[in-house]
Length: 432
Image (cartoon, rainbow, N blue to C red):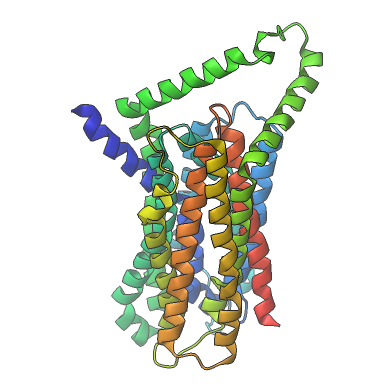
C-alpha cells in the first residue's frame, strides 16, 4: 500500500522538478512588460535568450567532456535550484531597500546601471540550468519512462504556471498600475519573482529531501544499479586491473568515453536532429516575434503576455497528450532496435514538417492579422512543440542500454539547447 502511494508521489516530485527547471528563464521572458518599461527600446526577450543559452550549452559541453566526480547529480540539482531561488529574489530584495531599477522617465534613472547586471544574472541562470538539466534527465532515464514524461511535462507546465503567475500578479495590481504607472507594475513584479523563488526552493526540497526517502524510488534505483553492475561485469575493460596502471588507463578511459558517445549518437541521431530542428523553428518565432513584433490597440501591453501564455498552455497540452508516450509503448515481446529506429524517424519527419510555421508567421507579420488568427497560429505552434519534444525525449531511454543514460541524455539535452540557441539567433532576423 505504501509503494502505491509513493509511486504517484515520486511522479509528482519529478513533475515539480521539471517545472522548476525552466521557471527562472520563463520568469524573465514573461516578465517582459516590466523589463520593457525599465529598458525601453532594447529587445530584452531576445537578449535574454542569447545570453542564457550559450552559458547553458557551454556548461553541458564541459560536463560531457570532463567527468567531474565531486559534481554528483545530488550536488548539481539541489545547488542549482538554490541558486535559481537566490537570483529570483534579487529584484524583490532590491526594491525592498529602494535600490531597484527605475525607468528612464523617473527622476532617479538608474536603468543603465542595472542593464549589465540583469544580463549577468541571465548568464548565471543559464549556467545553473546547464548544470542541473543534464543531471535531471540522466537521473530519470534510469527509471521507468513515466518519470521521464513527468519531467518533460513539468518543463511544459513551467511556462504555463509562470504565465498564470504573471497574469494573476498583473491583474491584482492592474488598478494601481493605471493610477500610479510604474510603481504598480513594480509591485506586481515583486510578487511574481517572489513566487518563482519559492517554486525553486520547493524543487530543491523535493529532490534533496523527499525523493531519497521514498522506498519506491529506492527500489527502482537498486534495480538500475544491479543492471549497470551486470553490464560492467560483461565488459572486457571491467576485468582489467587499472589501479597500478593509472597513466596507461587514462587514455583508455578517454577512448572508452569517446566510444560511448559514438554509440549513443548512432542510436539517437534521429531524436537529436528532431530536437534541433524543433527548437530552431520554435525559438525563431517564440518569444521574440510574439513579444515585440505584434501589437493590438485594444489589448495593449496585455497582448504579448496573452500570446506567450497561449503558447505555454498549448505546449503543456502537447506534452501531456498520450500520443507521445504510446508511440514508444512496448508490445508483449518488446520492440526491436529496427522498430525503434522507425518510430524515431517518424518523429523526425514530424519535426521537419514544423518548418511550415516560419512562412505562416512571416505572412502574419506583413498582413494585419486579426488577433484570433494570431492566437490560433500560436496555439498550433505550442501544441506541436510540446508533442514533438515529449515524443523525442521519451524515446531516449527506450533506445539506450543500461549504463548509457548519462551520456545519451546529455547528448539529447545538448541537441535541444543547440536548437534553442540557433533559433534565438535566427529570431533577430525579424528586426531586419
